[in-house]
Amino acid sequence: MDIEQLFFRGMWQNTKDTMFMILVKDDDFFIHSINPMLESVVGVSSDQLKGTRVVDFLPNHETQLKRYRACLRENRTIYYEEEGIAPDGTIHYFHTMLVPTEHEGQQYLLGSSRNIDDIKEAENILAHAKEEAESANRAKNLFLANMSHELRTPLNGIVGTASLLRAKSQEPELLEHLDLIERSAAAMERLTADILDLSKIENNRLDIDLAPCNLREPVRDSILLLQQQAEDKQLICNWEIDDNLPEQVLTDAARIRQILTNLLSNAIKFTDNGKVEMAVQYETRSPDSGTVTFTVSDSGIGIPKDKLDNIGVPFYQISPERNRGHEGSGIGLSVCKSLTELMEGRFHIESKNGIGTRASVCLPVSIVDGKTGLDQTPQLNIPQELTILVAEDNPANQIIIKRMVQFLEAKVDLVKNGLEALEAIQAKPYDLILMDINMPEMDGITATQKIRADGYTLPIIALTAAVIEEERRACFDAGMNGFIAKPVRLETLSSAIREALF
Image 1 (cartoon, rainbow, N blue to C red):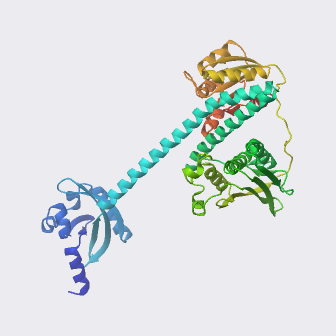
Image 2 (cartoon, one colour):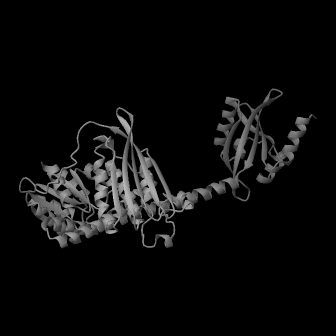
């Protein structure tokens, strides 16, 4: 007996793997022998099984025969996983290697199976943990979406009332109070938007909407939104925009506005004295493309060096003691970083503890031709008298939307669900419907589908506190002509009505 035979015999007798030899004869398969480990598994000796047809021994012989024939046909070693049932009825899992061979003109299949029960158990534990984590993540996302919706509903009453009062009054003290209300509501809007966007980012469901825009608009908007907060703290504010910045570029203006608002808000929040500055620089890469770098710097409390790596982690705050007097949610910079990366840009932050912070966002842009209406003032009038139906179930929102429509010098009727909206348009003609989405009895989507099915073509504009893209698409797929996210502002409502009708 040579060394190879000795090695194989030693393996056959002593290995913890189960081994077997199958004789191939007349396109049938017979057990030739099994090793001691397999004997202990099946509870039968090798001598007792010798010559037994595989089809008479294995309950799942059809699957095994296919593997055996594939191994012979392809004349190569194959690997597969299989289950085995022990005499006590327990199921075990094996990873099997099957080798075709020939001896003295006779074909054989040599098999070796390794027990992988531990691996399968670990896989099951990981799969269960993964499902639990995904379930928790789905619950979190549902909670965030619902919270965003529930916050936007009362915000609609606050913002709408302030919008109406501002349009009707010029009293300085009242306007000052309205400024405070609107700034507080805007802060709440930013927070709800950031929370919802964070959920979308984590699930790869946030889209970037590229369109021509004048970058001076989101820069101006973010400055105007937060300038009063800086003035209240008596901070010096400096803004600088590169003269070479193109008139129009292709980018997502809303996301840039969101990034800049978060950066400026953070800078003002963590600066008690000194200054806050923003610079916008443009660098040409080619005749029709370049990079825009937005830099926001402050002379605030700064960030310790050992904490910088955690900036951008959702809900991370350096310490409760440090943040005392500078309350925040800990998600603003995380959203900024994620949005920048989605726009294929670079986000960088540097800071010195006690000296200040400098955050920069560098974004690639394409230059487009044309002008933008930077100095346009929203029009609050409607060219002709209209009769508008408002379907809204929330009493406070009913009052606000009704008064807004009346301020625009249109007639208005109120209903509190989609079913009543259907009945109303059958009773009298309307020029337009403002349709809430989530209502009792019948929701706005279903009502719109039924209205369109009945042949009505009047414009329908969605009013909703949900701002996810799926709901927006559902509104348009149902046959709506426009979409207004709550809280509704007077100028937004006027613009949407004009766009739908004229």
